[in-house]
Image 1: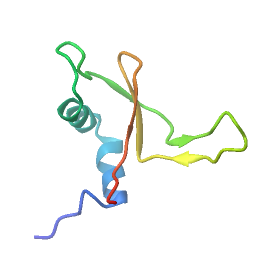
Image 2: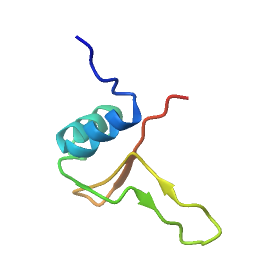
Image 3: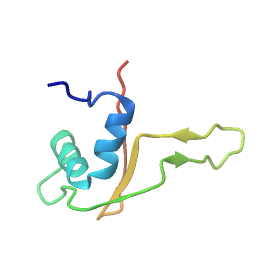
Image 4: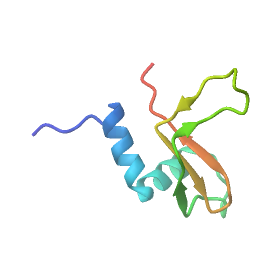
Length: 80
């Protein structure tokens, strides 16, 4: 059987952009969060980041979310 590569941009965005339980699990596994500080709920935010200064460029990230404490996370897949 052949599987989709989770490192591919479209696959990554589809998996982590549509399954909040997987994003929470990833963040909690990778971040050095103290007990009681774990991510338990997220809200997806627009992936386009428009700068305050018009001289700076726009950015588009893979997944942008906010947790129940108001912390914002950018979840990106970078191969290089």
